[in-house]
Length: 122
Image (cartoon, rainbow, N blue to C red; front, side, top):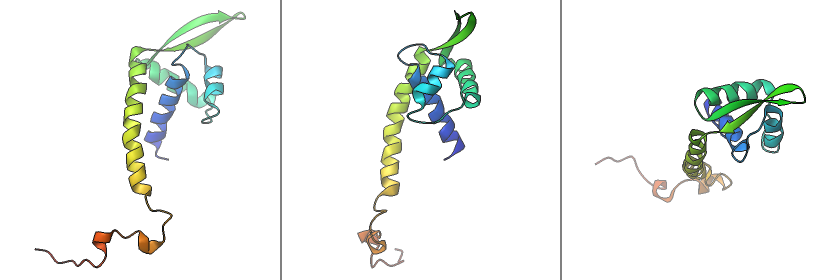
C-alpha cells in the first residue's frame, strides 16, 4: 500500500477512535485492533502529528498515581472525518472502475468500441 495513503488512513482511524469520547493510547490501540494493527511506536507519532495539526488536544490526568494522556478530537478533527467520508466515495468509484471485469475471461475485458477498431485518424 502507498505510504502516504496508509499514513492518511491511520490518521483517520485514530480520529475515529476518539470521535465519541476522549481516550488514551492503549485504549486507542485496542479500539482499532479489529480493523488494523497499530503499535505504540506507530501510534504516538500519529497522535503528536494530529495534535500539532490541530485535529486533537491532549490533557494529562492522574490515574492510579501516574499521569495518563487523554486525547480529544477537535472541530478540525471532526471535519477531517467528514471530509474523509466524502472523499472515500470518490476513491470507491475509482476502485470500482479499476477493478471492473477482473474476473471476466480475457476476451471479455475488451470494450465493445475497441473490438475491430482500427488506428485510423481523421
